[in-house]
Image (cartoon, rainbow, N blue to C red; front, side, top):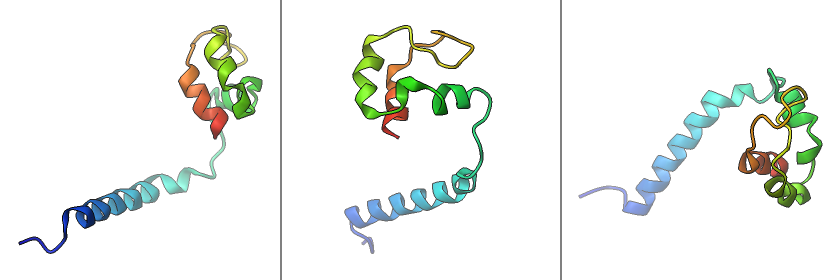
Length: 84
């Protein structure tokens, strides 16, 4: 007979994965943007607010960075950036 019930076992596994993830990636939170992240994320006017999400799905000519205009149309990715 198991000591933990199904839902408690699930929560324990979830907590272990959350702690492992925080331990592995937690130290990277203070690092600056790399490569084209600055122009693609921090300086991108198309993702400055969540209200622009509709525009992300209707405009296929959005820029991924300052020097790759329209190179990658990824509205779902940009939507998560706008929400964040």
